[in-house]
Length: 239
Ligand code: PGA
Image 1 (spheres, rainbow, N blue to C red):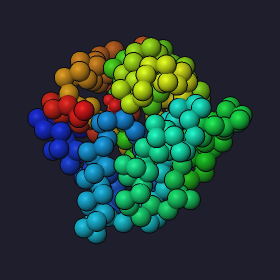
Image 2: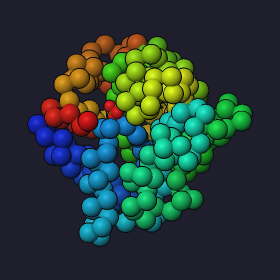
Image 3: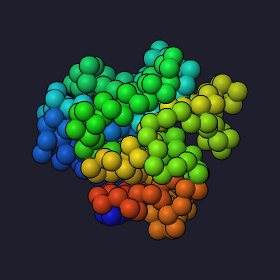
Image 4: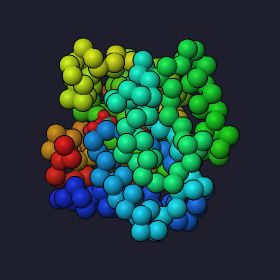
């Protein structure tokens, strides 16, 4: 595991973008695993700058997002499809047909999840997977005690996760109760992983995940068994 520590969120974001940039430069048709939340916004800003100054070209890249709320459509401003377009895709030259975000409106969720994993496998697997971490140690929406060996699936969100995310909604009641998420197995199959956390509120859980016991109660702890992880922490928060 390569661990990077920064005081400033901007410097941490630059490092995160640099790691993704080197992946895209070395393999222009990279498969990028992307994440939502406050943490990666700075990294996406840096990637947009690198695209604008012609350092990066995303024309041949494909992406698979980690997760999506069940019941929110693409137009909903809290859907992760909307977030990704707002914070990244609308500002770079990734082709819409190469963008994959789980479908929160899927009629047959189990079928959708199975096909999502199959599509990732067909594309040759994720080259680098970006992750944040939840206060409860979740990655994607894999909440504590989720099986380590599960693929993309529907997850019931813990109260702490819904409360954490309520800041983006008008009220707690509006926060969806379920999400479709890549499973821990799907995440672990990525060739490289970049996990980022920022601010004091995430410090303890980040340390616990990366250096504590590997247990399903701390889903991110499984990353200790991954052969190629970059971990970036910034003292400064991102909110
Ligand atoms: P955050 O969320 O980046 O908004 O802190 C991370 C997560 O819950 O995975």
